[in-house]
Image 1 (cartoon, rainbow, N blue to C red):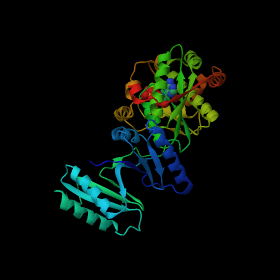
Image 2 (image 1 turned 30 degrees about the horizontal axis):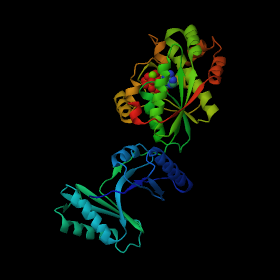
Image 3 (image 1 turned 45 degrees about the horizontal axis):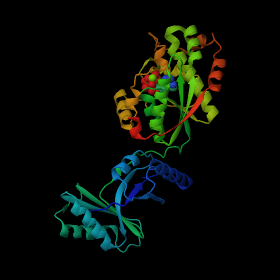
Length: 394
Ligand code: ATP
Ligand code: MG
């Protein structure tokens, strides 16, 4: 039986060079080790274009599931490591070929060490000849059922018949910090995932309206944060008491403008909190047209309260696509738990779909919202959530 003893991790075609590339690799290395923290016997090695993990007796399927969650990996393979001589390479490739139940194959050799006596084509030909003599497999260079990859380095060669797609993107945390507005809904946890995939470190803000929203609703949000934090390690969640502002909005603006004003206040708070904690952008789970506050007119009117960049990774996604992603990243089941959030508690019957800035400013002039905003920021509670194990949250 072929024993795959080394995982070989590829970063893909990095456009970054020099220091950026070193930072990328260092961060990726740290993130991989964090993701595999429950497997202390693994040993790691990083080079310019690969990371190697030496396995002992870990379950490859578990390792595969974890590695698929690490952003910055373009692909990875479970490989057999042999010495860099043609005889050992041939034997390992024949072992793989014999064990497979496929009918056609192709050899793909990469020579990282150009001093190896045979060129890649020569290795392909020699090894293929050996496989043809020892098995019933036939060569098919265009559409092979089995692709045997050989990576030759100066001292060791890695052989594999698997190439598993990685999560792509950039290592989480390498591109700076964003403050994500995290609700208990389906969309914003997915937005967190997309932002992390771009290499951003996500910090979250959640607006709660106790006692109208319950402790359970807050815990649901913290659980969602914990689930997505698996992709970056840990996550800070700033929980803001939004009750007073919301009551004032209702008192002074009435039904149609309540949501618009509420969201303008949310963005003002997010702006203040971003500046306080060094975040360079605000993230949301908005998608154009989904609800009244997400028409282009609404987005415009709400956006005028801040000059910060607003990152909306789901802006053009359909709900179905967002739900598929939520299922994939494991947040969907928690998101659909029926706890109230601060928007549903004062659910207006006729929200405006084309709000105007002038009217918003008029309603806002009726109360001293600046003091309330400052109070909300001064009294926020910061929770640092850690990733929990998958079996604990489903
Ligand atoms: P979600 O499923 O993410 O709740 P949604 O479709 O329900 O989104 P809205 O309720 O209009 O849409 O919210 C749009 C975005 O505003 C959310 O994706 C989130 O980024 C932010 N948001 C809404 N409510 C809150 C809240 N209570 N705390 C923090 N952010 C919020
Ligand atoms: Mg919502």
